[in-house]
Length: 335
Image (tube, rainbow, N blue to C red):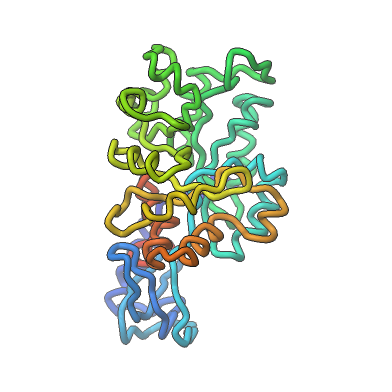
C-alpha cells in the first residue's frame, strides 16, 4: 500500500476547516466528554468534532456530524506515544506488539532498532520501517548510532555514518538514536561527534544515553548537541540533567523502573521537558501492564498531576521529536 502520508493532505485540511466553521457536517461527534488539555495540563468539559483523520473542533455545544457518540463524562485523551522503546526487545513482532498496546490507548512509539541493526544492519532497519508502514500503531524510528555498541563486540553487521545518512531521509525517521558511547562523546572523538552533527544537519534530534554522568562530563556530553537522556535513576541525577537542558525521559519498563525515584520531577512546572518511555518491555509485562500507558497510570497512582502525566506521554514526546499534529486533542490534530 506504500508509505502513508505523515501530514494531512490539502483536501483533508480543507474538509476540517469546513467542518469546524459549520459549512459541512463532520464524520463523528464525541459529545459530553472531559478532554485532557495537554497545553494547560487541565481537564475541560468539551465535545470533539472529527472530520476524516483530523479533529476539526473542540468546544461545548458542537453539532453537525453523521455519527454521534455520547461519552457521558468519560475522559478524552490524545493517543499515547512511547518516547523511547526497542520493539525487538519485546521479543515479538511489531504487529503483535501493536495488538497489545493499541487497545490500551498507545497509538505511537519512537523506536530505536539498534539490536536489529546489530544483527542485520541497514537492511534490518529498512525491514522495520517497511513492516510497520501499515500498522494501527504509528512507528517512528531513530537511526541506530552504536553498531556495534563497543569495539569489543562482534556484531552481525557494520553500520556506519554513511548507512545512517541514507536512512535519515525516510519520512518516519525522527532522529539519531541514543549515543551509548558516552565516554567517546566526552572525549570529543570526531567520529562520534559526527553522528550528533548528522542529526543537526537534518533538523532532527540526537538522543542520549548518559548513565550516571554529572558535572563537567554531563556538560561535555550535552555540549555535543545531544538532546535527551533516559538513564537517570535518582532524583538528584534527573534534576541535574533537567537543569542542564536535557529532555528528561522517565523510564518505567521491564529491566529498569525509575518512575518512583523521579516522580517528584513529574511536575507541571517542568512544562515540555519531561517525557515517559518504557525502553524495554518483555511479553509478560506487556500483557500484564501494557506499554507507556502503564507509566501514566503509575504516575497518577503515585500522586502526580493526572493531566500532566498524560501530557508526558503525549504532547511532550511529540514536541520533542517535532511530530506534526500529534499529541493533543485540538483543532487540526490527527484524531
